[in-house]
Length: 137
Image (cartoon, rainbow, N blue to C red; front, side, top):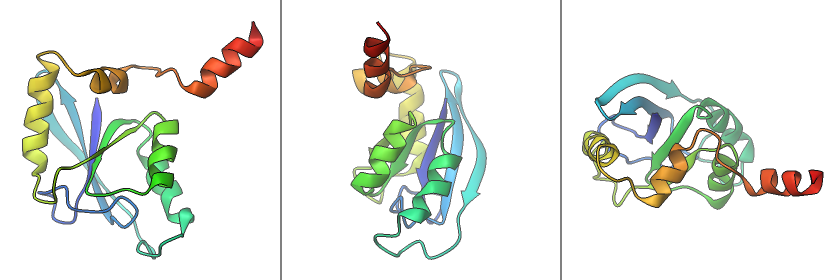
């Protein structure tokens, strides 16, 4: 699964989703993890209320299952979830990306908690999909 991290130093999860200029993406499996790429974003990212800045980030993350952030606004979180990407807030801006990756690998080899099992589903059943299926019956 692909997992992303908002970061300003490529070591810690220390960037707000909307303001982050870089998002590191890793492939994570039961066997370990591998760095894939750094997504870079330009423009006026700190402007509050500028929802246009979210679109390119959300589109760039559609293949990710999880995105770890220092902070995230409600609108951005809702848009990510709608695309099947689960935002996860770091405990602190000192959380190291490598520590989280190692914990994810360990968790995948054990018994993942319900929120992670749901995030790992290939085609998560959204509320809208359920409504469409009910209407078709």
